[in-house]
Image (cartoon, rainbow, N blue to C red; front, side):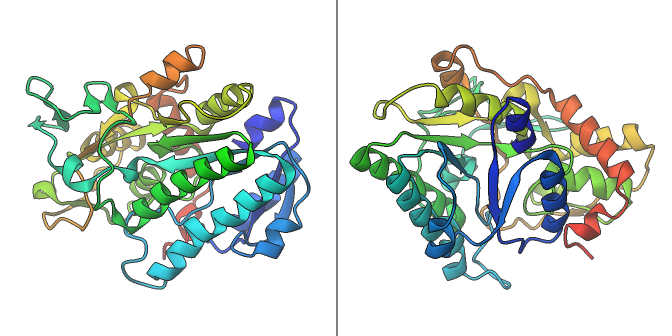
Length: 341
């Protein structure tokens, strides 16, 4: 997305603590592209306070795994520091400089029991929303809209993102700077550091090409769970449209995803990889579900389309996957760079 902003003639400055494996690679590439890079940590108020003045801030910083905070080295308190406390420092920066703020939120702010309880038709390749029966408010054949239930539980990760949305909107109203919240589906594109917990499209394509072990987890181990993909360029296009709208107030929360046209199941993704790479190994079925897993999550972006001049994703899912595949072929060590042994 930073590269897209540069092509639009904007000046871009980024801050990152480089704690994620592989991020050093991105730092060098972004600097070559013309992004001003600051090595810092937004969990530190002094690091944020020292940033140069800007017109808009894109807050895309988070530990983005729905399992974050449950186990391993990333504890629950650290999750809150990454996803919420850091946002407070960003909000104070926006308050000081009058900068607008884009909060890149998540489809995982929605109620897990409500998502898990959606009526599904079980086809041979994927779960499909059964819209022949009465559906809960906020979901349709177009996907999940902003009005869908956000009642707990939403996961620790989802709770930090939801709390961040509310806090950002309150700061914007109190101190008079514009805030936009975009709840995104899976962001996916070439050069993404994918893992089994996040960036699933990038991870799966790389893992299939390298014949790394893969698992179909839950739902009888058949890989029928479905997600949609949104390319960062399409998100960037939306942000630039929103940036032209002055003031605050009114509707400020939108869902932004690839929608049904850019959605597929893991089984369908695996089949695409076999056809693209000519591979024959198969994932291991693992019928035991993980905590917070859901069978289907597709974003309904129709409100954004209606309110922002007909905006709609332009980069198709086949284009996204082909871009990831070409990058994977050119970078055989990408999974290792991503921190996967």
